[in-house]
Length: 272
Length: 72
Image (cartoon, rainbow over all chains, first blue to last red):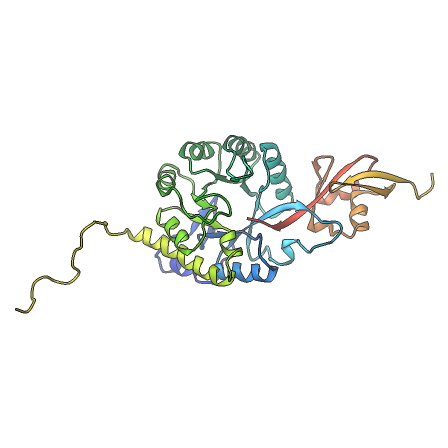
């Protein structure tokens, strides 16, 4: 696996954290980023480099045969430098998602797929029944399925049961930037599952990424928070720092909070 | 028939007239697509990249040519 020297490795090399391992592939960055919706491809590449992410998501779409736009992502992102995680975004049925996953695998990079089956166009919330069904088929076909899902424990357990290599509950709806709406259920999912938990979707700003990682999850995946920032490259630096901060704070173990003040300086030895 | 015989296919969601006698490989070349940069589905079956020359394009075929684009 390619590792970047962008600083995310520092926590691992200093023994402060372990690498993230998903189905036998290790990543020193716990931040995974999308490649959509950037104003220009150059800003996208600069932001992704600044984020320190090693795994990046891509979508499968028809080639525009009229050449009205330059859209092939691999003209801009070197697949030797980044681990490509193809998604099934836009699919509304298990059948479609399976079709897109097979097309992605035929591109020849890896067997990983970010499985996403949308159940409702207004909220973009997942169709969990179709997601479980597609996950089962794809896992049986040898895919390494990373499943986007709701923050629902039972669905997460089922996705693990059918063979997903990572379960990815949302922080809040895709592209909403609302942050983690249900940290308790995120913690419960992390507590009950063995596979890595990557919180996917809904992160809006650095504090959201930090709070997400403070729940103890294994990683965080975002796209719009970077692409729609006024300065995506600067936000990418912020997200990288926030992801590391939240992770280290979780590992460090926070102090107990209490609703009374306790002085930090000695109460003895004061002058008369 | 002459070499200008045409057949109709559905290519990436649009009906197109193409000359008769194409394989998937020669069709991709004709429309200036790098075969190594795409994945091709012929009538809902994903084709092995090494075998594009083995598949003849026939009247009424549905061909999808896809690649990776930016996404989240």
